Every structure is written in structure tokens, then in C-alpha cells.
Image (cartoon, rainbow, N blue to C red; front, side, top):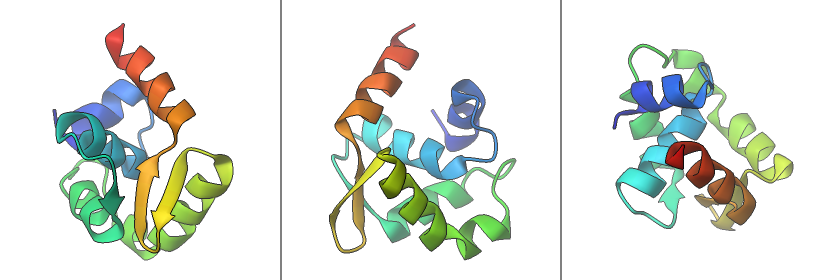
Length: 94
């Protein structure tokens, strides 16, 4: 499953960063991912990715950590938080 199809299924549209995290976590079975891995996946979502996503990635990651959707496991390395991961697992199971 690609980030564009994940974005469509998640209903996040512009939130290609979350879709990229979902792919890295559920499709590629990564427990965590770096900022650069996340950006590379986001760029592969050609129908959703815009240059502003990359330019605002630091702010987006800060917001996702503050909202509790992501956890920063070490400097520049993130994972989906436990509660967000459970929500997404339920969403994809249906």
C-alpha cells in the first residue's frame, strides 16, 4: 500500500506525513522511523505531497508529538504513539 492510497483511506488528504508514518509502521514493519525516512515516504505520495510539506516538516513533527500522535524516541527518530497505533490498527481492520 502506498502513501497516496493510505492518505485516501485515512481520510487525511493533506496529512501525508501521517500516511507516510502508517506505511513505515504497518507495511514496512518499522517500530520507529527517522525524519529523513518519513520525508522520503511522504515525497512518494505524488498526488498529495507539496514542497510545503518538506519545508514545514519540523513544525508538523512538533505538532504530532505535542498532540500525542507521534512519540520522539530519540533526536530525529519517531514512532506512532501507542494510542494512535491502536486507533489506526482498528481503522485498517474494518
